[in-house]
Length: 307
Ligand SMILES: [Cu+2]
Figure: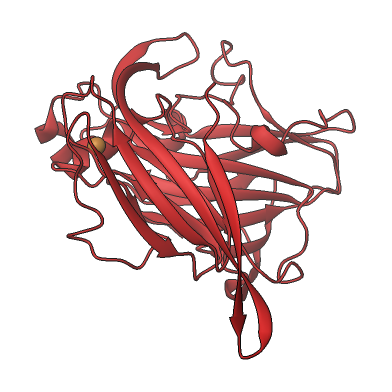
């Protein structure tokens, strides 16, 4: 899998006589129209993507970072594409403008608010560009490292609906989806409902697991719940100042995101679902296995979003 190319330049600025670090982070994404698997059997779907994958790469910056962003639209693309970062405060017309095949577009923003934010294509028709797979998560770590309890493991889950025929925009407008997916796959992390599933989320009992949850939609609200568990903390938009305690479910609308902390006192499984049951039973279930033997690589490094 191609790693997100990201280079970091650190500049020192003198402000009021004190040295203040202003970090500039270069983020590059390439829009590509490719086939991707939408289930554990490998059924292929004509997707529009960032970096050839659904969801797109997880982008990780720190509160206060200046992000210099460039979108390259691959010359093999048949459509214009764009990126709308929900972590940015910019000009929708100039900065979120669509980029033609073979061209590049750039803009700069400062990540002023910590948390987890949706990013997606906003090219016309947006409903189709997102439904085909042009979405991802950007995590803005708080500058104050003590603002949230430290997570032992972190996972990204992005919910989206699957429309059988990606050319049929009318079905998207009429909300005629067939399945709801986490991270672009039907029952991707659920061997209970799909014996072909080989992947699960893992942690040890007692560990704090933080799930960065994004609802890409395009239409459905998610009632995000852990079956056999309780959310120790929920942070709407992932901002530490929004902490709520002891929740069973929390609703995340399309285009929204939140961070969910969970700790299990026992070994065993939790089933992470959208408790809107047509969504869960058509694919939006992920097993979180709590075991003393949890793989130390899971929920860390590149395994925050389990491919
Ligand atoms: Cu697009």
